[in-house]
Length: 150
Picture 1 (cartoon, rainbow, N blue to C red):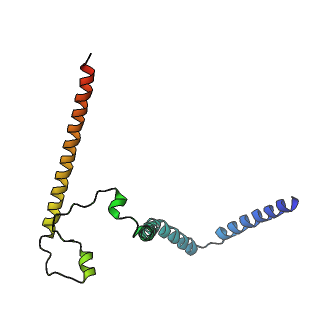
Picture 2 (picture 1 turned 135 degrees about the vertical axis):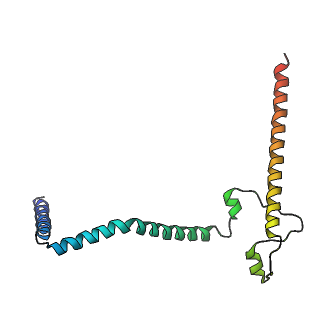
Picture 3 (picture 1 turned 135 degrees about the horizontal axis):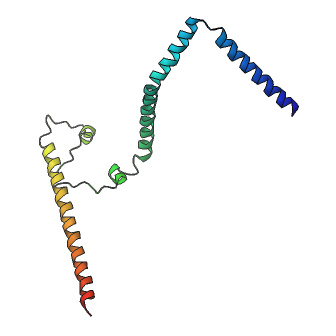
């Protein structure tokens, strides 16, 4: 136990002597250099952290994409329903065309198909809401029927 206390006191003395000696022997040029280094670090640190965060996020997304690829579709992962497709409609994704080796001069109607798909999706959701409300009204009428019977 005495040896540990002795080592700790020697270590403390050496650290204090070295720090005092460093600051006592500094010239104006060394002080200016130290201030510039510390100031540059303070100014650049937030940008370096943001850059590192972006790189880390990209790496994390790549790793998670590799883990998910082939097991779950992105729509299933988000909890969305399957895409509504019009009858006779071809796939309009650019990836499919590139994989098949087909290329068209212009993708005529691509935006129109997307707009139509959104309109149909909204109509389906509106119909589902209407059916849900009518079902709730029927349940309310059934409950009302039992309450009014005395």
